[in-house]
Image 1 (cartoon, rainbow, N blue to C red):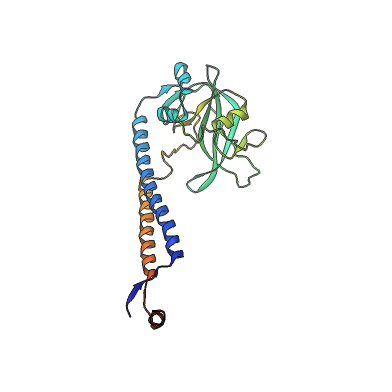
Image 2 (image 1 turned 45 degrees about the horizontal axis):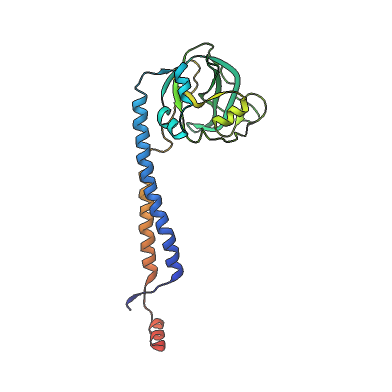
Length: 254
């Protein structure tokens, strides 16, 4: 028996909906790969530059421009800072390091200009029981700390941080405006991430991107492969072998 094309509208509709979505997701992953490569290139360049002292005019410039302009200008900028540590500590939950659950320790430093900066000191392991708090090592008073500014559209958004009462205070997400509201202080629109070797740093292995460009490309290939598989599956269902009953029906209704 021969194979003939049999149009089935439900199968065709499903394929027409899924195919553009899969192809779009593949191209989106390719764009993400390009963006992540650019971020990694920018990080490599900025990490080679001498740090800026976070004082005076630099502090004033941090608040200028839109959120996108702040990200473009200041993200991963290397800085040094000296100020007074406050006795206020936030613990950012659900942070993994080498397969172990823990917290990022977010401290607060008061600068000479009277403004404050949130400082991510790094990772610390979580106790076995959630009811227990980790023992956070003390900061080094009056020391010059060094690191890089972390600026993203996410951390600049006005979002509640779902903080608990008391100190240290657990939080579920990182939002500069949200933490500023919790503190009731004038806070710079950045997060300072301490680098390894800074006096008050903990475990500080900061990834530049969440997903490596190679993984983005692998995901793109998967989406394109699934698109091809969808087309082949649709054709397989549509071109089916003609049976004797099909021939009889054609003759009967012909």
